[in-house]
Length: 544
Image (tube, rainbow, N blue to C red; front, side):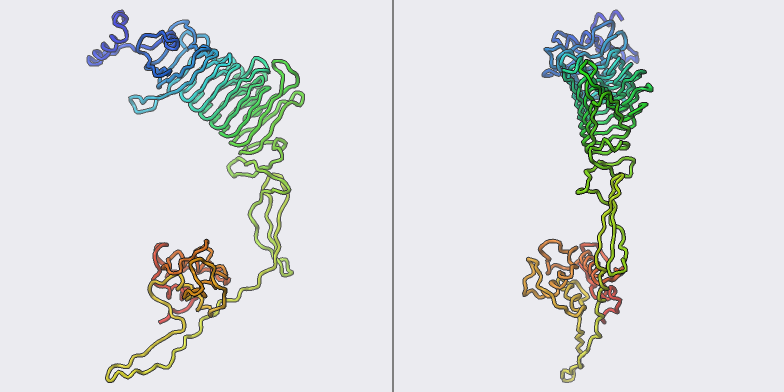
């Protein structure tokens, strides 16, 4: 080992290459906390890190080799630290926090790498005895990546924000254990006059534990002494706080405010308020003041409980999805079952009920019929009804008259054969026809009823099939094929168009739409057998 110390890191790299060729196993180096602190302060000389415009990127693990100070971000520092899948580990000798943001600014990233098995490796901040990252004196911490795990502390084992700001957009805070509150994160002030904040825009806070045996809270997040927590995205799941008098398995609020505008809180555990607990007191001392929870969106699976000492708690749920919530917290809203164990919060009231589907018509025995729809909101007993006259039975379609065949004229062709001419009253083409021509067949089949002129922009009054198109439009059988202001009368009629027209005609005529074996092909294919289709639709024999 003396030889490695003499050669230094660069010499060690050369020896490592030589040893690997010889099949030998050599010990690996790790940078010390002093190395990284020197890098932050601009005095480091070595190759354990790379530097780029204020960003420090790890090239190996950083380990506390003795009783070294925490990685410290002083008030004059603005540091971006890229873990690059390596660890910052304080577990060997340290007694404080792994990283201490003492008035400065820290951004944590993790550009990542892939191990020899092709698995993505996450960088870690670990081993802290008094939080993984401790933020105070108006310091600022932004977490875009990496994993803060395996840390301990009194409050906020993962991240403890004490008179500072924490902004989380990605990464994960997991597997941390607090002695009191905030297994994952604690955000608070020394007194009610300061403004510690936590804004969550992404990432996960999961699998953390707080072991308070008193009356604290916050298995995932602990908000105290006038601090503010705003959750817009991200997940808080699988966290636990133990103790019979503790609450807020997901989020515990103790004289602070929590606003949930999105994200997911689910599967957290506590003796009370496994989702959220809110605690408020009267008075103006360091541990006195209001507590509030406002929810506008997102999904909250778990109870919401309140510890109200003097009427100083506010809970308002204005939107989102909840699994268990007392109606008194709904702020005039209502709940509609989603069918998945949650209910969505809806605006509700006399002027804005949330209705279900209409029921079947019921004959009132006086020529009228009524149908009812119920209010969907939990606890709402209001219903809505509609009554109208029973429509008269529709006139069945006029059966086609037997085509008359005129006397067969005899054409004198000398010795040529005499030709018979057959001119049926309603000729049906056996080949492709236009959309207008198809409606003309249907119109003539119905006896050429009178109708107003069509109001399609592409069907002038003198169009060959204007009467048929106007009739079809007036009885409402073109809503599927021509919902706009044009009809395309001269386009070939397709399988889909014929099906839609006949479905609406059957509904108009009070017929049951038959299964048409003769209507075949892809929806956009032209129809070649209109004669057979109409004959099958009306239950007639096709014309010879």
